[in-house]
Amino acid sequence: MAERKNICNYIDIPLQHGSTDMLQLMRRGTTREKTETLLRTIREKVPGIAIRTTLIAGHPGETQKHFAEMMTFVENSRFDRLGVFTYSHEENTHSHSMTDEVPPKVKQERVDQLMELQQGISLELNQAKIGNIFKVLVDRKEEGVFIGRTEFDSPEVDNEVILKSADYLRLGDFVNAKITSATEFDLMAEVV
Image 1 (cartoon, rainbow, N blue to C red):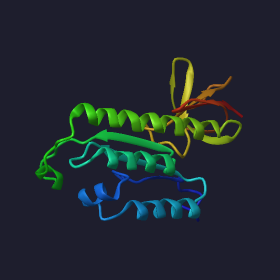
Image 2: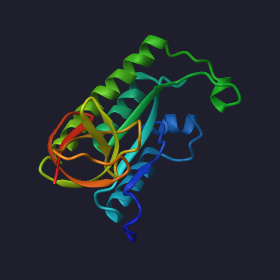
Image 3: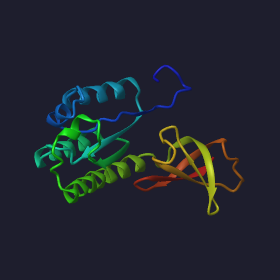
Image 4: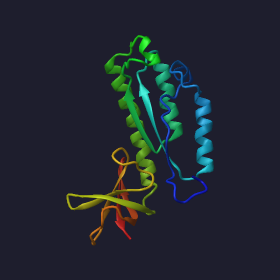
């Protein structure tokens, strides 16, 4: 990625948790410290890379302490994109043999807390893009505006770029767009 211009600077790593105890319980074969080192290495080798991850809240054995560790992990890691899911008891997994003791309400509260934290991080990261020009792939036209995405956005799950243009934009074309404003999960831009 650092060597080639034709590869998107976007990586999705399903890290699943931010507590070493929970990572070991999940049999992930890593620790929080190793994960933090990996993230630093990726960012050093590919400056400006977008890192997306998914986490699980409410896995069997997850205590409030483990959850607090995951919150700190997310706050420190400053992921560009984050998805959080509640643990669901799935057959044919190592965790299926464990008692699913975290109540559904607590699982959802934890998801909500993580996503609220990420919402603030996303807003800061998006606002830092205001005034910058990005290459945007035009995906569709909707309600009179064109919608696209940068190389840092996976379709249907990440940010969208709402494009303002006096001209018709062809779907599937790339345009250069200057970011004029930002919300937590979207960028507004003018075609330049």
